[in-house]
Image (cartoon, each protein chain N blue to C red):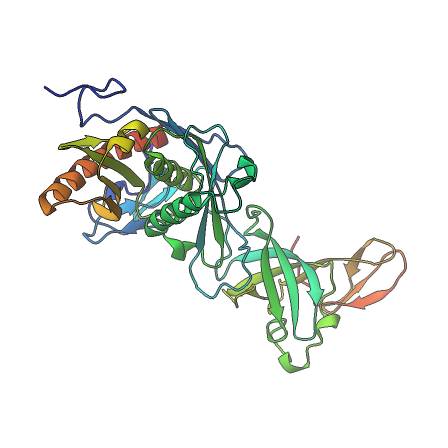
Length: 237
Length: 182
């Protein structure tokens, strides 16, 4: 008998409800809005268009990701440098954590997109985190991948993502922020579900080989489930 | 009605991939874009509702505005590719001296072929250098399609392959004129 989770989910393997809306931004080439429980992420993709950087020497297209966090998002990833504590919080919206998040999402998208189909052009992906309650990287990857697909950028496959935390002995799938804080280890997986290829895996904490294998399997199942939901949304629009 | 697909969806277990599709490692044809699957005799592809992406590819027919004419090249802002405008402004194009016309390539004087403000029709020659795509006008139907007289503001009319004339002032200027079929 499992203890119910803090948000009412009965099982450690229950994913939160994922809802996906597409073409939410009429000016963007492609856009999406994703809700995963309380976590809300919106994404707008512009391009492929003229590259901003003037000295592109590669014959493939460039994908640039920028993550912005609204001031009223629940979790403020503030990294305050010494001496800047008095600066207004608004100026610290571009924190170190968000820069890292941008890089992670960009890595996933670059693995999925066929960048050789738009050489010497640039695709700009703007991710806005509107509310954060665990799984913001997951929601961001899902939103960005759907928006990129809507923009018409050719991709090998859609990217999907899922994460879990270990709380004591339990592996808790798709954790909320509160569950993340109670955890002593986390596994994040981004994959291309049709290809069944892992695109990005991140592990925090100490894991045995067996445990991490189980964790990745559960994440993969979660990814497949989210991928199905995203495809349903794409098929309807 | 053909089915709506998303990137990664399998279109055929074996076959030829057309525009909007690719063949994966196991030989299956998969969609690479969102749209409707298009089954043809020679293969299967995917058609986007909004049309293909507007990016310059080698061989594309482009229209652009000349921004600057230098000694060795003319810089063009590509405003339309195969008749469609790219997202968010134009791509950078360059017409080098050797790509202006097909004959007498060594004696080209660029300021007698193009002027800033001209609208030109060109073809994409290559991906070019780091800064812009290389374009060519070395064909009869390529070159200046519209030149405007600096003072009168009137569109100048072509009087030969190499000259245009302002209908108001009568001034004649040199251009590499494109043959426009009515």
